[in-house]
Image (tube, rainbow, N blue to C red):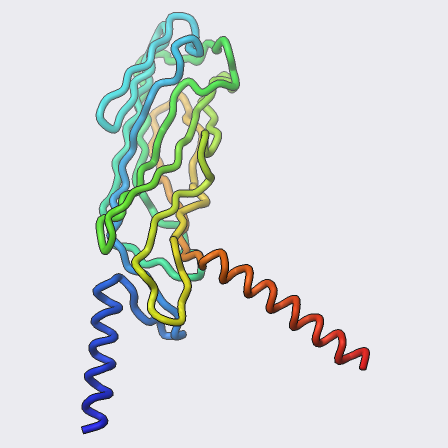
Length: 229
């Protein structure tokens, strides 16, 4: 009878963890399984930063730039997928694909402010389960390079996108997960397509990090005193 109660308790605990996105890893650490949808939102920079005769237009998941003799169109195709985050940063995860389509002799003729973004790209990450939340990283593209639009990550925001977690089981103090180390490149003036990737990992509560650091300092001090004695 006692064994039966223990088995039922284990099953109930496992079901609870799974229902909240958490599950046990072979090393007894936790994994957090979540559904993620990635989308892209483009926006034009200030018109005064465009080169003479140039224009910028945005559409759904796309942006079109026009120079005197050609056009450059960007489009982003996001993904809906299930991802597991752990306390060890993951391998690169593909979040979507950027496509560059050039028509005619598109050329960057320079801007009135070469370090100012001509356009922006927001990579939006939406967690749809077990929580509903969203975060984004914004990339700005300048005209300081004649043959491409180099980018600066991440304009006006952190260099990562963070998403909240459900409450971690007892004994664990994770409070958020962070997507960072985006694999982005500049936009060249030729037909191309490439994946945008990032890495994800769980972050502990700040108080846990502080307590761990304090504990290590105290431990080091105790060892030093012991050696002197």
